[in-house]
Length: 436
Image 1 (tube, rainbow, N blue to C red):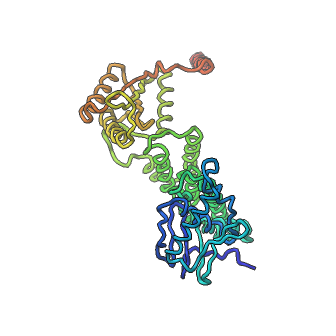
Image 2: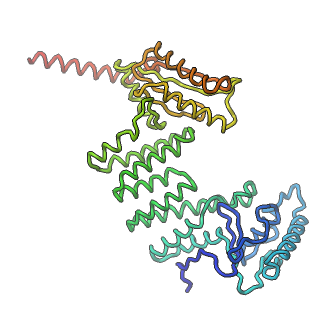
Image 3: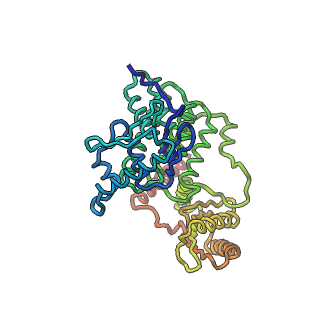
């Protein structure tokens, strides 16, 4: 019986090894193959399809459907021409006497005529390893196979051939296999308390696909290892990855997941020194405080509550960047440059007690506390003048402000609840004085 844990990933001897996950590369005996794969085209696609099909071969109809648009092309004639060109290309390469294209009963095969030559493709290996993992009898064997699947996957299937129908359908399949493998491997590692491996696996997964799910897995592993500082850093990196750096606002679902991830840190006990260090700012700054969008939401809602009670006067300022013609900036590199400048201008123009965040690539939000309308105008002028001095007439900055006292007030139900609470407090206070 074949050993399902017999994992072989490295190329050795005279072997043709084709990489299709995250890149496109082929090596024969460890050296680059003398066939121009980067050129793409139907000839290279046919070569890859034949390798991908393996010993089972691939039917003429499936090849025609994969390579050509039958409505606008004579697929049968086009395939004959493409096969002829591939045969010529193989004959002129180092593989000339080793592999040949053959047809039997309308099925195409890439047959090997060198007993020492083996042909392997990372995508096919990935599928095989995952199928073996589902048949594995022990957790150790299954985990080993799943780890091999994850190591093989370095990104999307054939990224240089995006748009081809057969590539797109296969791409979603291999992505799904990768996601399943990461989840199942993490579950097995957690069962056996192998948390270090979970951290490494999730770090790699985050580089390929930055998903909140991988952040959650990594943080749970770090918390299990009692590495609270690293867990906090992982959370901060996630905020930066999903919001801070790009300025793009994720869906409500992702925001909720990020808050759920951050809440896990509340369950991690630590000494007063660890807590103090994690709460303190790393560096002292004279300007306003920049925070992530989820953090800004919490700060804004608190400020709004204080304003409702009449204890604070908060103002929300919205800064929007436009080009010299007062139109949205389409050049992303130029927009990023102006956005960085505005970020610094806002930081330098406000007080330490004010906070701000990046709402979108061309928009910032400022929460100014204890500020009257006339002072707000001064701050806006300071920001506008500073931007003008740095960018000239290339940028128009739109500034809008909203007094939180005029934000829209509380709902009718909230007003009634507040009045009942205030009445209850007055009643208890009156009763206390009568007793005295």
